[in-house]
Image 1: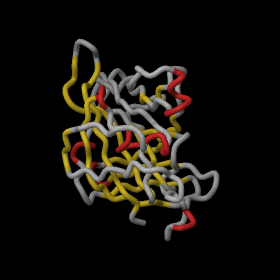
Image 2: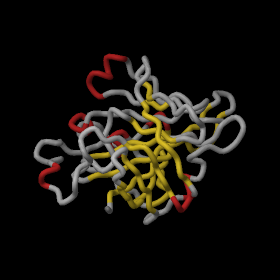
Image 3: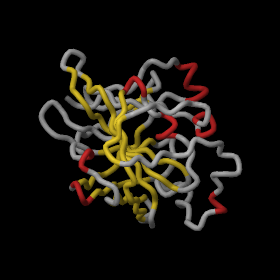
Length: 225
């Protein structure tokens, strides 16, 4: 009942264009296709049931759009990485593992069930664009770090601490539940003009015949400080 491989339907060739990012978390699938911001603009967003009003990321070209110098916030220091995520409203206080890509293009799963992970080839939380943090929903023995992610509501806060000691606070704007076969790539990985955060885990019905959950839950949040 853990998370598992994300989507594996894309070939390695596809990774060179709009990389497949699939989180192999436990035994259940958390699907995500990571497109470059400029590629994401050409992809159609899937229709998905919402758990709360969804604040979708604009699917636009990054040219003249994601310009940190034009923003009023301070970008994360060069070389900084996120080391901790806290979500007080659901009791999450976790270190962050660095998640890379496996040989099939899937995002490696966090080693620990109660530890979330950050996609290290993506945006550093606090930087321009969508930063990605994923975690297990459960394991074969019980709940995992993101088991209560569905309880998050608009206005809840998420804080991410960087290796420099800087702390960035994000506020939840909405969430989206989507079938794994129709992952909303543009919503999740589409370019945004300001720093944003996406929290991803498994959701929906657990199919015991495949050992996978059928859906993904994506929580959207924007930087507030």
